Amino acid sequence: MATRTLARGMGTFFKDCIHPESRWSECPHEYKIRYRDAAGEQTEESGCATQDSAIDRLTEIYAAERAARRLQLPYPRPEIPIG
Image (cartoon, rainbow, N blue to C red; front, side, top):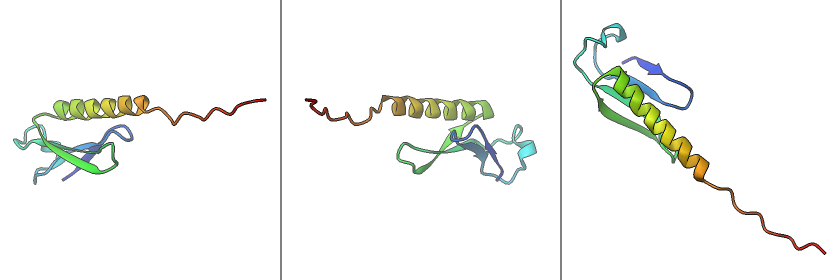
C-alpha cells in the first residue's frame, strides 16, 4: 500500500491492494483518501474510482475546511473606557 501525498495539510490518496503503485491505473480496486477533519482526527473515505476523483475530493474537503477557518472570528476584545 503506497501513499501519494499532495500539498501539506491536504491529505493523501492510495489503494489498499497488493498491486504496486505503477499498476494503479490498471487496477480495478477503488482509491481511498485519508485526511484530518476539523477536529484534527484522522478520517478515511473510500469509493473514488479514479486518481483524479480522489484528488478532486481531497481538494473539495480542503477548500471547505479553509473556508470554515476563515469564518471563525476571534473573541471580541473588551472595550476599556478611557478617561
